[in-house]
Length: 257
Image 1 (spheres, rainbow, N blue to C red):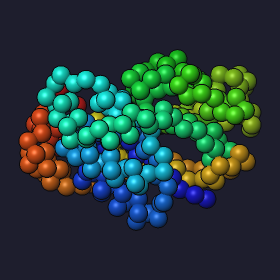
Image 2: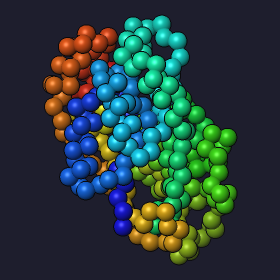
Image 3: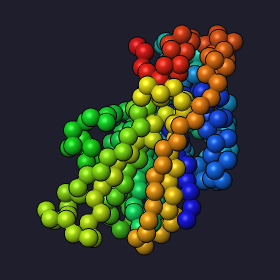
């Protein structure tokens, strides 16, 4: 069996990313997929982009990665654009929307926020209809070669890890041994978690990669502590706009408006 680390929402927090990569290395995992939002909020967006670009096998576009390419009128956005420069901005603008692959007979689909747009947010407590819509093929996701819909969907964006299972509406009302159901998971955030736990979060998938044969697989959440005081000091050192908000969020693991 093979392991894949899935990370998301780094938001320029290089110390958190480095701690996660060190943990991934200790676990002997070589394949890393990133579900977007490399930049923004933190002081090291440029270094994060460079690190992700040379380390991750798959990188998906997030709303910040797309949005930072638009004209900015706020000090924080202008500052982030200046730190990134034209080459990194071009790289972020061209990132793919989603990725499909088989693992132990399950068709996985990963994207940043939803199957519709990097800006369409689906929360943990969104309606069942909204959650099921994540499993549909759209103009943005395209379709698997055989037209099959995904069995398992993973995403980032909301910075809150969770996993739920749902009955597949296309299956019979009475479950049989061949019914597999649907699984939806959020990978959480490396850089700025919002679940009240101020530690970096990522996932590990384990199974038979690229195999359409049914077999066992697992999904594991990993929390990684890192030096938050050092991360905050980096923001102060470069006089990053909105440093105080960034410091509050990474030290509490909660949203601060």
